Image (cartoon, rainbow, N blue to C red; front, side, top):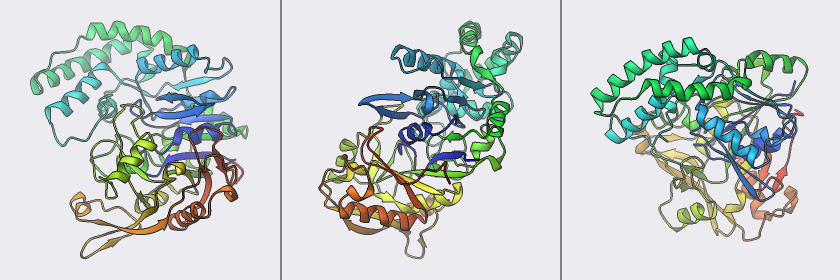
Length: 432
């Protein structure tokens, strides 16, 4: 058995899409296990960019089984649009089996309305939500009033659940926010069309996965966002609404934890964050602007500028621990080319304490922390043509080696450019 989980080690946007696309070539099954269309995975193949929000990144490889697991919240309009777009561009091979868990929860229009209303009316702290309805959909799941894919496909069950939810959501929208009510009948008609479109993909994905694993097939579990956006282990409340750590790969797809063999943590060569929340190594200077511009740091889902800063290895070490990461895939290393001196954060410090292995849970304490840096010499040579680690400049190799030491796990992949071919593979996680 050689099943691999791919997770982000920072606040998302680490380049998981490219790494999943690369590893998908060696996998038989690619399964997405959490999140929704608030995440965007960007792939560049032959110089052409493709952004996926719900469909697993492995979809670009013909003959692979692709699964959207029960841990994902699905906006059917987005899913259908994504399928149609891929087909129009000739990127959805006819022989690619795509399955959607019948237990996945469905994002409804009232989820999006509530999401936007909360942020715009200033209810609680502003956390920088994408407004896609992800959080409210997960709330309904936990409250046991959510609508699942299997409910959407049963007209009678769907009508009953929808009517009950519309009554509650309209009270919430009109009385608390002073917003216009939603039209339940219009939603019912809209989602009836969606049900017909997604019906062919609905399946018991837990059973499907178990059968493939029993055959000895290789499974790649794809996560969204990053470890520090995890609802339990991230910088709460500036987090997403699901568990982004590797342990949720089992729960979010319906397999046992013994199915996971190795965990690859994706780490950007610097740090970025979208939206609100603490960011100790953030740069408000020319270097920060340079990282943003050269790295094209715009949110794949929202288009918002990403905040940029030096690589934070306290974050990464924390992620290694909570996800059991066995190897690091380093991305966007080429963006650092031309910076004379590079800094790496190795600790958080207050007047009384030092943190090197974990991020303080108390945000008031975290606000009093200051980053402790190491400084390394940069490089000016173009590294995008490198095919093996020996092709890289000496200072680039030193940077990689230092990160490997600080993370406490080996480097398994180094990305030296955005294209699929601009990658140095150091180990095959499926072979371990």
